[in-house]
Length: 97
Image 1 (cartoon, rainbow, N blue to C red):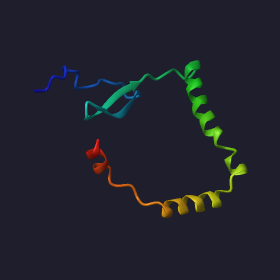
Image 2 (image 1 turned 45 degrees about the vertical axis):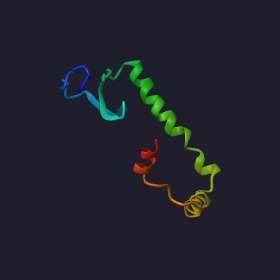
Image 3 (image 1 turned 90 degrees about the vertical axis):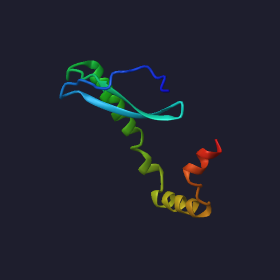
Image 4 (image 1 turned 180 degrees about the horizontal axis):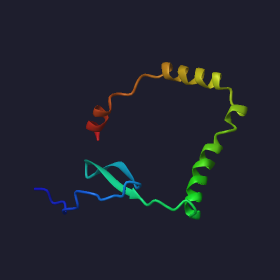
């Protein structure tokens, strides 16, 4: 018997609203939690702050080319991949839990 409370099964959104789906597991059952991100006016400071957070994240990685030898990094990752046995399939790991 399904004891979940009944929730609305549809969403009503404006064409300019974003719909975000995030996979979640609740009591061992898979769901997708949907939410609509409110659209902020172009001149709203909160919108600018959101955009700046994304740009800051991208900028956080911008100096890596100057401090890392990417060819060596890729070679190291390839070596690590070949030096270690592959993980068992995820189904087998879940069965052990």
